[in-house]
Every structure is written in C-alpha cells, then in structure tokens.
Length: 363
Image: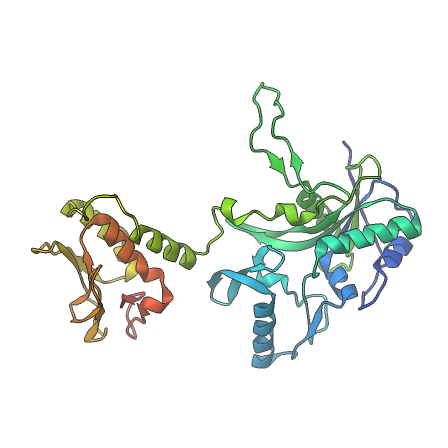
C-alpha cells in the first residue's frame, strides 16, 4: 500500500449555513473515487451553527463556559484543578466535552457536532450526488490519551469505510491465531490527516489517497462503534467514583458465615499501613485490640475538631472525641472498606489550616 496525504487549500473561514460540499469540491476539484476526506469537526460545527456566545474574558466568561460544559456533559469522569474529563452525550470521553475556543472569535465557543456520523454521511452524500465523486468522509477532532502526553486527531464521525479493521481469527506469519487485534483505522487516518492540516495553518481538510481502492462502499455504522461499552471498559470510572464503587462492593461482601472472624492483627496492620499515607499525611494509625476487637484511628495532627461523628460498622453513628476520630470493625475486609471511605467527598472533613493532612474521616 502506498498512501498520499494531500491538503485541501483555500477553503477559508466557515460560517453558519455554509455549504461544506461546495466549499470542498471547489477547493479540491482533483478529488477522485476512493479518496478519504478528513474534515476537522470545527468547520462542521461552524456550518451547522454549533456555536455559543460568551463574554470575551473575565469571570463571566468562565461562568458561561462552565454552564456550556455542564450542558454538554453526560457524566464527569475525573477532575483535577480546572481540568475536567467528561463523557459527552455522544459517548466520547474527553477534556471539556470537546468545547473549543481556538480558531473562532473570542466571544464564541465551538461545540462538537450534534451527530458527527450523520454529518459525515450528509457530506459524503452531497459530494456524490452533486459532484459525482464517491469518497469516504471522516469527521475528526483532537484528543488527549490516558497515560500519554500529547494530542492526536481521532474520528468522531465516519461514512464510507469501516471504523475498525478486525484481524480476529486471522493467522500471523508464525502460525498464531489473532484473538483481540482490532485496529481503529479511522483514528489512524484522522491522525495522518492532522499531519498536514496543522492547528494554525487554516487547512481544515485533508485527503488520504491510496487506503481505499475505489468508491461504492456503504456508509456503515459510523464511529459510534469505537465507543467502548461501560461493561467492557475497565477504566470507565474516575478515581473518586472507583473508590466509592469499591467501598460499596467491599462493604456488602458476604462469605456466608455466621459473621466476621477477628483478623490476624498483623494483617490488619498491613491494611492500615497500605492506606495511612493516603488518608492523611502525618496521621498516626494505631491498631487497638480490645474485647470487641476494634481498630481505632488515632489522629496526631493538631487542629481537627475536638469531637466528630464516629462509626463502628454495623452500629449507629455516635459522637467521639480525639484521639478516636473513627472506629472500625477489625476484620480486614471491613477495615479496608471503611478506610476506602476517605475517597467519598461528602464524608470528608477539611484538613486544618497549615496541616499536611489531606483529610480526616468523619462518617
């Protein structure tokens, strides 16, 4: 296979209501059947009127952007500082729901196309019917990746070629059957197009030539097949959500016996050590074995409330004084479940001013 990546020059700025098919066909009369058209989602959004007006600067702009982000968000996945990773209503997981303030007036924000697959199908149909050229269309946008620095373009919508090249069942040159290899070829093609489009060169469309041998393919199911089902996504939850889910699951475990057996003190100690630095830096955790086999959290950080609500698992919350901020049943599994509660924001006390502690438990 020999690929060419060609820029489509001269499209210029795109405004609401513009005819993308006409703009592209005029700028690239050299298009031919089998070309893969990689179109930046921003010009699709502009043509479709997916723009919102916001103040040019100041706190009012930030407040307006937050409102827009909330409307575009189906689920918050993770937050750190001002960065918010969310799942959009399309199912994409990305920073700030793909809302973009670049290459647009300072008083506007650009949203993702409402249905990128439908946008790709409509553009492909217009080029075929009005200009007699049968191309595949990818609507692309820029995303970050978990565990890797840097950005790359990926496909949000596609028409005219399969989003995934499935190698499962094939035999490699060494005689091994492939069981899991599914290549997201439309993401690879989107990234290839970005090499030519750039971010500041006003080249919103690229053509990848040589990947397809000709036109005539069905539109296909689109890029939605790239969105992993929640049941198959091992990383669907953000950190706080995962902690809550783990706490709830662990707290409801039942071994079928008459009740929890007292744990080996050494095992409980190891469990405490595993989370001590996470719950509150500078806090001393002491395992106390009494007639009820309880574990007691002893706070060594000054400035916490003189009293707080404590919990012995299985009993009603009761007021306790320092140093016994929280008490836990001492069987290891329940201890781990209770300690995991430090990840639940509604159950956290803020640390005292000037303390190195991250939080104190107050259930």
